Picture (cartoon, rainbow, N blue to C red):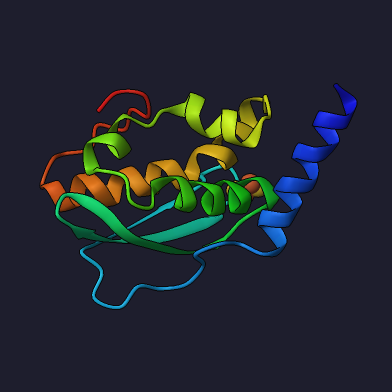
Length: 136
Ligand code: FES
């Protein structure tokens, strides 16, 4: 079990040091921002939508290793998915990807990118985002 924990820790560090899909989209279909109220760290995420799917996603963020790794992994997960699939992504998908069970303070770090991504999708769809991360 320790070997797996170590592998996941290394994976988080790798995504933190080399965040995938980091940057700003030109001509984004939708852009949303959010911040972690506990630390003030921020993320701005943009999506390009084609034929109802995420054709591209990029983000800029200032955050800790967990939030940056979460954004990086989430960008890879979201790429090519339908908007409906992204709407259905929940906390479990993100925490499972990171393979961590963060305490109450760090869970906001892990979920910040998902909330921003959902905000961007809901904004694109013209639907009011109610703030829930588990239900579309
Ligand atoms: Fe700010 Fe994690 S400490 S996002």
